[in-house]
Every structure is written in C-alpha cells, then in structure tokens.
Picture (cartoon, rainbow, N blue to C red):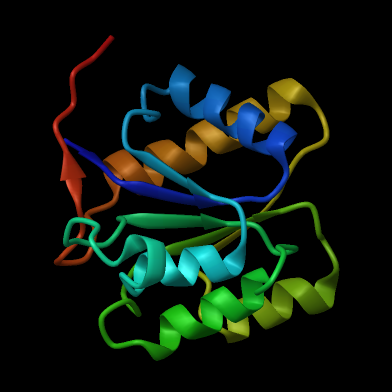
Length: 152
C-alpha cells in the first residue's frame, strides 16, 4: 500500500518537477500539495478550509524551507510540538545548503535534509529515492493515511 505524502512547496516549477519524479516512481496518486506553511498547518490541524478532511495524518511531509506565511522551520517546529503530529517523518526538500539552515532543521527534529539538485535528472533521482524510502519502504507511525496501490 502507498502512504499519503504531504508536499509543501510554493514554487510551481518545483512542484511540477517533484510530481514528475513521484509519477515515475508511481507515488503520485496520494500526494497532497499545499503552497504555504500556514495552509500546511491548517491541513495538519484539520482547521479552516480543511476542517472536514478525512482523519489520518500523512506518512511523510516533504517540506520546503522558504515558504510564504510560515516558513519550513515554523511548520517543523509546530509539527514537533504537537502530540498528534510529532511522529510524522519530515523531510526538508530545499535549495538551501547553508550550514545554519541544516543545523537548525536537525535541532528542530527534521528526519532528513535534502538539498534540491540543480539538474533535472538529478532532482528526479533524488525525489524518487526520497519518495521510495518514505512512502514505500518506511513503516509510518500509527494514524497515518494509506492508499490502495494500483500500478499503472
């Protein structure tokens, strides 16, 4: 079974490339795409526009660092501070390779920090491997949403 992926990314070009990578890995069927940190927190906390969403948490959050409204650090901090969300694996998927950003992300409890490669093929490969691990191989925490897998 596939597990739900929450992709939090504001750049439409990056979203398109990430979705191509997930599609090539057959992981695109249960991806929730949100464009800013505030929207991601609303989704996770089931409030505002997402108050009626189905129960269950994503099995992994792919989180950009530089987001409008609430940045990736703010989202990560809120997730780790919430007892209902703190076990969700979070993979930072960002263009920043600044040492202070990497250090802060790990201090806040990120599970993986992946710097987006510049080349198309490298990005496709990195996202495919990341998606395969977190959405297929890794056993998600209790309460995660799963989707039926239908190849093809």
